[in-house]
Length: 67
Image (tube, helix red, strand yellow):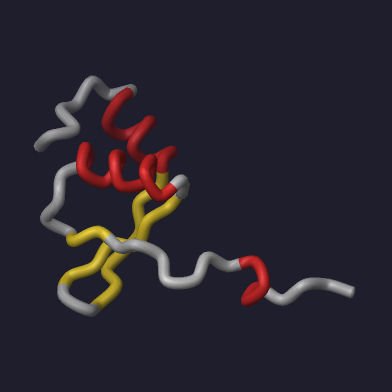
């Protein structure tokens, strides 16, 4: 029998305010041992960021993760 998504999901995921730095997001994701984090403005979900996003779009491009 197939499992429902609810049984696989992460409950109460830590979210990141959209004005935080990439470095902040990476450290939070490391500390929480997750590969994806919801990005919020107030209580509204505005997107997600993944460890792959950080690796490909910041680290591999030589961009400053603090900006």
